[in-house]
Every structure is written in structure tokens, then in C-alpha cells.
Amino acid sequence: MRNFYWHVIRGSTLAKLWFCVRYYLFRQWAMNIAFSNQDLRVVGGQDYRAQERLTWTDGVVVGWSSKAIT
Image 1: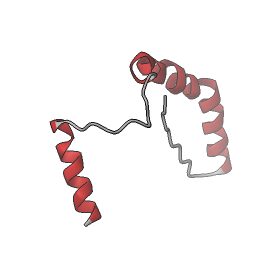
Image 2: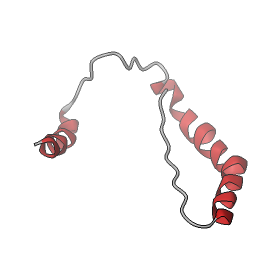
Image 3: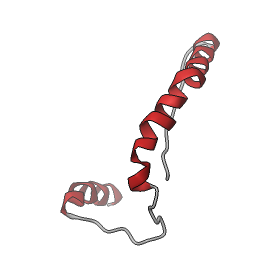
């Protein structure tokens, strides 16, 4: 399973330290265990080498990305 979370900390060294404390005491568990693992049964068996299959609901994303490329 692939999940990516980005954390950008701006501010003083004390603010960064406080974020790290909160992250390791609570947020890491909340995001990586409680939140992400709820989808594990569905996405755990994904084959990321397989060809992507788009549906009609992906039309907006494809439209936006093709405009960004041109």
C-alpha cells in the first residue's frame, strides 16, 4: 500500500520541536494506523505495475491534466 503524507513546518525551532513531539506521540498513530489502515483490505492487494483503467468519473482529472501539459 502506498500512502504519502507531507508535513511542512514553518516557524521557530520551538514550533518545530513541538510539532515533532505531537507527531510522534499522536499524529503518527492517528494517520498511519487509525486512518490509513482502515483502507488496507481494499488497497493492500493493488498491483501497481498493472495498466491503469480509467472510468467516466476520471474525465475531469484527465481534462485538467491534458490542459496543463499543453
